[in-house]
Image (cartoon, rainbow over all chains, first blue to last red; front, side):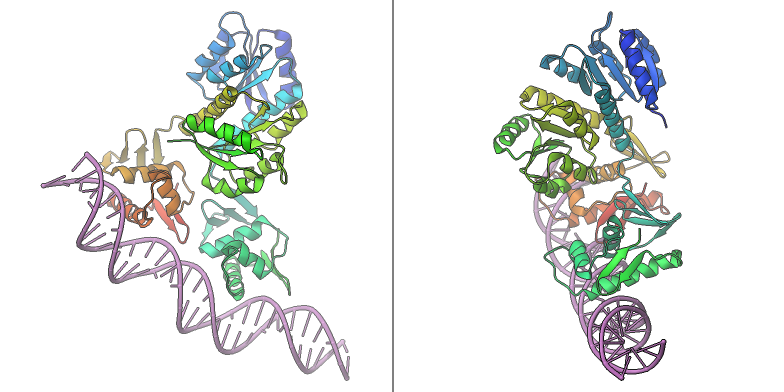
Length: 226
Length: 226
DNA sequence: ACGTTAAAAATAAAGATATTATAAAGAAGC
DNA sequence: GCTTCTTTATAATATCTTTATTTTTAACGT
């Protein structure tokens, strides 16, 4: 979905300049030429706000404090005033970043992108999921799904799958797998790997009998088919 | 609760300088003098990371990319290299901010504060009341409801529920739960977690005998079913 | 090409180990 | 004195490892 960005600046040229280039990036743009307009448009719930500090009437700092009463999206200050004090004040009133004027378009875009990415990360947090053929491996929930069915793996089995899946198409010896999953200091027989691989294959095959997920490379080890 | 900040810089003087002043602010500090140390300490789940770019071995950019595989907390770059290109690269690899060296302590503190505030805003975004299957958990009022009936939980029990509920579908070891609920410095037996989990389950089961709310992942820990 | 051989891997099942659940008593806090 | 928390001991159970056996594979010589 398109992210919504609100631009607030009394200099129309600069607004136009920013809007054109951000629209070209695929963002949806809301424009306000002063603080009052900005507040009126808040209910449209922008995903990010770019704020000039020096504006007639309510200035950017005040506006920012006001906005923060209602909305928690990232706020980027843009200003020609760029002493340390200005930057700090911007952050204190609830801003998230401070870009000096004149700024390069590239830097503006990158910072906007970085902030939106962060928001996105936060909203999708805790879902570290790896897709592999018809399987989905959730490394935080310790779950593996085939379509919508949950496959039950034990701790060791899951750790082996996780390790292999994270390095697809790469062959690992039993010893390497053992070291990765059990830890360097523990010593044990490598046939236990064989056994676990067997169990894993059996469980997957029950749901997906046609594909091969873990293939054995004779004399070398095992690899995950990516 | 104290926020945990990890400082990564090969210049020990600078690290000490930052640590002292941040500890004075009440933050808990983790220190790493190179990227490898930083990665080793990642499991301690810092709330924010300050990263020098120029370090021997793996540099800050690479480290940042590596960290992003695992953790989504804010990452602040600190560097003497401060061309526009450097700043942009920092953001591209997954960073959230870029502070030029030499920096003022005040600006560092302010930026750290601003980022942590943002995280805080995100995590508490209007979710005082969390719905989970047939339960409603009010994290501010310390109350849990099933339909209209209030379930009575003790302090520790509630804190455990609250922590798990706020990270649904994510498995936590007993040690992790202990650390989150009791605090890092307190030491105790992890079997006490087992006992509390049992009590919690029993109380919930009394009202809702069919659903499973807390499931155990053998050899790993417990998780809240979301 | 074919069969032989030795090494490697797959299988099956029993034994050993480790983790979690339970119950109850003791300690700590209010 | 009552509730809550922690510890201890025990029971139940899931998982892991080992062993023995069979099957597969690649290499070799004929």
